[in-house]
Amino acid sequence: MTALRALAVGVGALIVLADLFDLVKSLVVPRPHVRGPVSSLISGGRRVLHLAAGTVRGFAARDRFLAIGEPVLMLLRLFVWLGVGLSGFALLIWGVGTSDLGHAFIESGSSIFTLGFASERAAVPSVVVFIAAAFGLVVVALQIAYLPALYDAFNRRETLVTMLESRAGSPAWGPELLARHYLVGIEGNLPAFYGDWERWSADVAESHTTYPILLYLRSPHPTNSWVVGLVAVLDSAALYLALCPSRAPAEARLCVRMGFTALRDIARVVRIPYDPDPMPDSPISISRQAFSEAVDRLVRAGVPIERTEDEAWPHFVGWRINYESIAVALADIVHAPAALWSGERSQRDDAPVAPVRPVDRRPDQPEGRTAERT
Image 1 (tube, one colour):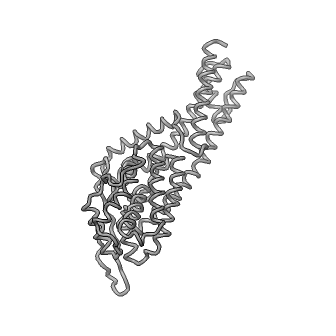
Image 2 (tube, rainbow, N blue to C red):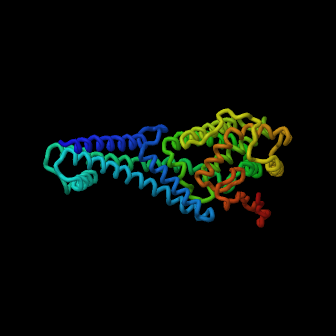
Image 3 (cartoon, rainbow, N blue to C red):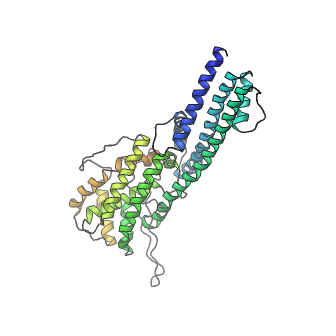
């Protein structure tokens, strides 16, 4: 074996091992991990995708573009894993065989894709060929097993996000969520509601840090978003705790706690800087005027306010400061719909969209009342 072929064997083995290591970390190990070479390449492709999305005018068109782009990146990652492995095995086959480099690539592809139309008769290359065939089957099998797990987590996430549309409008907004429960007299359902979202936050923290691609998969309805929905739920709980401390259920406090814990777990994975122990009087993006208007809306809905605005404001700020910076950054990164209280977007054409309250039609008032816009 010449020195050049020996070098090819070493380099090929390193390429195959690095590719397999990245594959196992991405699809098998159930915890956040440092990006491998293939994952880093896909992350670079995602940045290009989102830069391209920034040139698309209008949120609806941009949403359609991104809804297709992320699944394409998933398929691209599969082909990159296969392509890198094919190159590594080609170097191995060439290093231990007698064929030229071009034929080694053909033989590597024939083995990985289990076609079997090209092979050398030497014993050592045959061993490499069998390993290459096993590698190809492992990559495809893991990807096939990965997709159901991925979409199962996606469906679990979207179930509550979709249910939120009837409770908080679309895009969701915290004050509207709290107001609608009191308007129709179902405020007794709020403890169970916040309990569901506490469990939802824990599920999202686990699934979205293990499979970060879930962060970018978009909701079926363009104006729904998991980030916006979570912000709305946390804002409603923060308002409840700030304005009605004796009536707000313990589940609201637990929901906020689990919500910002989930956001912090995700922030570490996507490398969003945040203050782990913010001061409760730090400034937030919501103005005092916006808070006052939200309180007026809640009063009109019949929410029994226990604190004055001046008393409630610092409590609300103290709750929201725990999750605001991460939520706003994530909403911008994933191109979430511009909702009230969800922060500004890099896309300047994305003006905040207020939820529209449905007309309240009743048998004694079939025409209902005019729908109120926030």
